[in-house]
Length: 606
Image 1 (tube, one colour):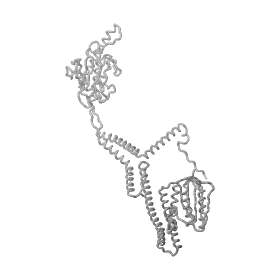
Image 2 (cartoon, one colour; image 1 turned 135 degrees about the horizontal axis):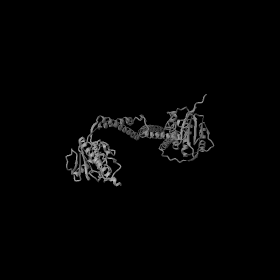
Image 3 (cartoon, one colour; image 1 turned 30 degrees about the vertical axis):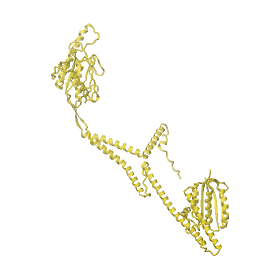
Image 4 (cartoon, helix red, strand yellow; image 1 turned 135 degrees about the vertical axis):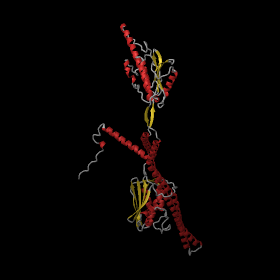
């Protein structure tokens, strides 16, 4: 027969995954698996975490749906927007180009100003003469400005959609007209005249370029270009500029206000001014125009996106929680059924969280209530039986006693011997009546656990030997033989000696009373682990399991025809069970092969 194949190891435990760094990766994978299992276990056991996770998932799905729907409805509700910020930047750029033409190459080019309102305000400060910064390139030759007739490129990273006013540094120049200051480099006497002549030509060329640019801007772009002195008197203006005097302070103030609060969507005239040097005098260059608009499209806002996202959140949250809510309703319905008295009803345990725990507690509560109600019914039934049996067992001897006493009272006897027999019978009945009352009182005390136990260590071997010696004579008179099987090993138990003697007295008395004559009664003792087991056996009719279980009930008799006058009080075995139970022991009966065996199990003393 071929051997069955060995089970294969998991993939991560095979070669070469046991090598480094595979073992490190494997440890990380196992850690992640354990972490996922731990999180899953905590989520399954906590309805609070389940609701939080459900809320987060539904909220995330609603946000995702809102983003998609807002994009869709935004395209549908797209609106037209007229933006003047690019035109404002163009005006300011042209003004800076004009300043560039007026200033000598050694002067600093004006900074670009980004008029976007969201990037904050920019303060314009004049730049001292001769200053230069790396932000603005300075052309090396006058012909580098040949591109002045074209729209200049935006500087300093300006974006369309913003408006501003800017300023550039002022500078002084020496020479004729608008000529810049000459270089301070050392030159020979023969070259000085040539340098002055070249500088004059350069200045004239820059002035012509400036004039041509102003004319072009005025004709094509409708720009108004004005140069004023410090008092506001116009010293140069374009053909479309009618002003002869300009309030410089008002222009500066308005330009500063426009710089900080210009709106992208307002079609108003924009003025850009810069300090310059014109004809060897400090002046102001003012360029004014209405900025050209730029048409763009922006997505519109729609409340449908928000409402639809809210509807998606509500739907998903309801969908994911409806199972739990149905379970809650099921538990509530089961509780109402149990409240009507139907303790047989059970609810399903569908989860491991608080609701599942509640279902288990409800089922356990119903089970406990049912058990208690059954115990109460049984106690009530036993109480009624007790009253009935006590009434019957007390009435019979009392009737006999009263009958014989009446005979004695009426002197209804023929001789003194007969009267003495009546007295003897009445006395015996009174003794049995007293024994019945004593048994009933003893059982009541043991049942209520009001009797204190005086436990001490006692060798159960010696106790049985002594008790059996007392029953030898009684058994021989009844033609019965006592057979004992008691080991020599001392088995010590903690017990109340008087109460345990009462137990064995009841068992031996029943064995003698109900054994067929002649017969044998056997008594045995054995050790079973940490317990001692005492067995008392005698011949008897076969009994069913139910009859064996009822032997230890109050007033139970196998033969209903027996009474306290013929079969004892019916409380002996019930008292024996109460005593054994108070010693944390066990007592039971078994029937086999025509014999009945009574067992008492007690814990051995350590």
